[in-house]
Image (cartoon, rainbow, N blue to C red; front, side):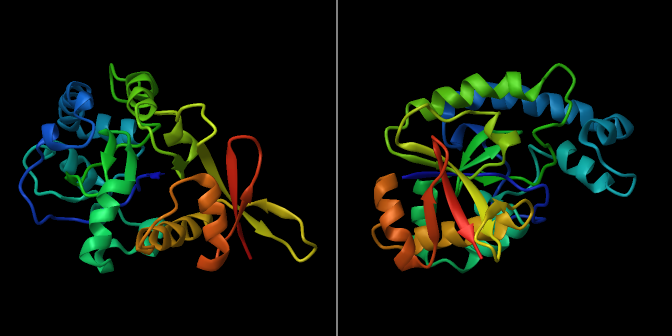
Length: 248
């Protein structure tokens, strides 16, 4: 099963590996599109005021523009270690056993406004670019949606999509019965459920960690639904093409 994760606006500084090698990232057919966008983002970063406007940054966030200027020279980290925030704090990839991290490299793909799609262990630099950023000449949905959708369409295994809707639009999953979008809901005292927004990220992170630490992860959506109760999760079918993770 392939699990699709959103990226995070916040990213860990520094790195333990050499500079970005775009050709070594997962899904190498995206390499030309990645290189073109990287050139555009670096060019934009030479104009700090224009960058802050395009990236919706405040005056105190000039460090984010500096990251973009150094995309091809700064050190890299595996993607699951680079991204921070609620989901990635709950996943806590740095504490996973070696064999579980290797599984993360196989099972996880992270949607990225800059790279399109990266593997869980792909080494990437710190950067700032969101699904709604405005890079001159590169409307991101038009740049990525068809290309990433093509990559996902060639994946033969089931998919569980945990991306936000903004990032899912940068590369829709195939319209197949073995692909599902995950929504996180909470149950009120009266038994009714409602969608969770910010707080859904922790639930997603804990679910992904549990999946990775399962010696034989579920291979189908039905197996995933059967696995969930014993793993401590309430997972159920929702609207067509969706699963719901129910949190207390």
